[in-house]
Amino acid sequence: MPTQLEIAMDAMTRIFHYSCKEGDRLKINNGELKMLLQRHLTEFLSCQKDPELVDKIMQDLDANKDYEVDFNEFVVRVAALTVACNDYFVEQLKKK
Amino acid sequence: MPTQLEIAMDAMTRIFHYSCKEGDRLKINNGELKMLLQRHLTEFLSCQKDPELVDKIMQDLDANKDYEVDFNEFVVRVAALTVACNDYFVEQLKKK
Image (cartoon, rainbow over the protein chains, first blue to last red):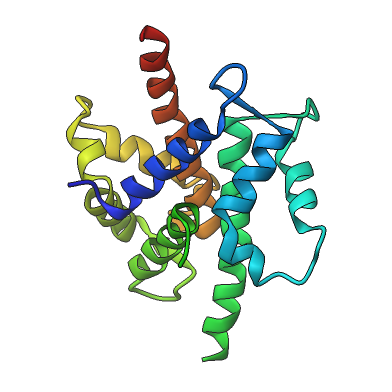
């Protein structure tokens, strides 16, 4: 049985590739990316007050500005997003 | 209800912090890291033929060579490991 960490790694891989509907399955375009974020970060986005957050994350994700995101770009930015969430978690930890 | 991607991000955060037993809860030492890898990458490691893989991953994780791993180093390397697994996945996809 896979562990939680293995399930997490597998989830990132599957979510990305299942979002590649048009063209090849190795990159996602802007429309697919926006759908991915809205579908897979529902709770995270519902807690945010910035209405332009999805657009900001999209711009960050497309590091090389080719209007497409490959798996490398995707996973590195999910990591960055996780680090940002972790900073909040650590702040809460310090308050205890 | 959180999505799969949110669960994955949450799992990475919790696995790291629950592994910080000694000292502060913001870094893990070499012993804690080895335990984390052996406990949370069980299936992944059981498929590998290289007996030194855990040590290699540990060296890679400790990017600044201070014999400790912070959350940033941890998450970035989990991302790198996921990219490596994805490369294998893509190879399989091409064969179909």
